[in-house]
Image (cartoon, rainbow, N blue to C red; front, side, top):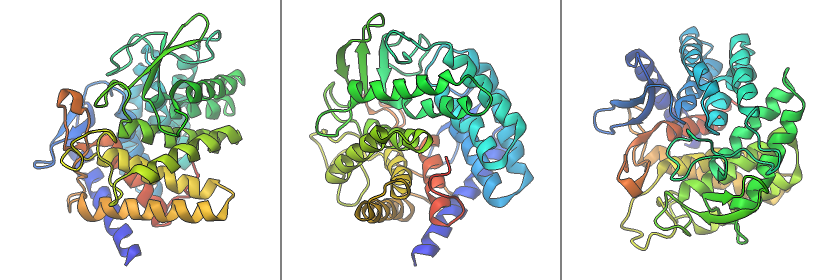
Length: 370
């Protein structure tokens, strides 16, 4: 039964990749209308463009069909100008948008593009603060610039770890580790919950405040922040084997497992007083499904391996059975409820992470491959 569910989900999302690749000619899929299936696109990729490429790289890996690799390369080339944009989210763009092509397929051009993104981003490292600030062009942040940080950026630092070992400067690895380590201080609370953002003195690195700008209030636990923290530290441990990152990922994962709704699908903010009469976020939930599969493979403790694997399967099952329609549209992603943007929609990163999880669950991908 479980195997059939995973295969059904995989096939549906693969069909969605086919439909998207055949219909989208300009821009990057950003968020979709769950009724019509039509994508709202971002011209240059915003912070999300790499996730569409990532779906194409995964499809190319699992099917060995040339069209998916062609689509992935086409949009990777379209991302290349973003290497020079002043945003920390270059990590997201080039990790999923290009690095996956090298890791999964050994694609030489994808490798070049990923290295270009890493090289340009590394130049913005703040050595005094030991962190990458959001940058002046950071997408959607309420506060931007050299003295702002966000938990969303931890995972992208893995781009620099990979690049340091693949033709880049060896110092990039140290930058990435410092960046991720600082975000434990900046964003991880004492109970394992995650605060989305923080401000710091760009000269000394001293934190001046913590805040959640997309949640229901500044001190709330926004579901996607928690999810980014789990996957970010899991990925950083995977690439660096720095045990503190595994500890941070597991700390945040245990908080999620202790607070998520009984049906495993998160509400958009854990502190919304209207729960259960409020929005869900399948995108945050999908991120965690993929992250738990990684943690099950990375932890050395057998009871945690079982716990994470069972929770990942239950989470993926809830998404496939209740939110993934026959067209491969994953509904009820909550992009930004604070401003009423796409609050029950298909979100490209949610689709990506569920596709990644289903690759693992069907045996098409090793859980700690990247």
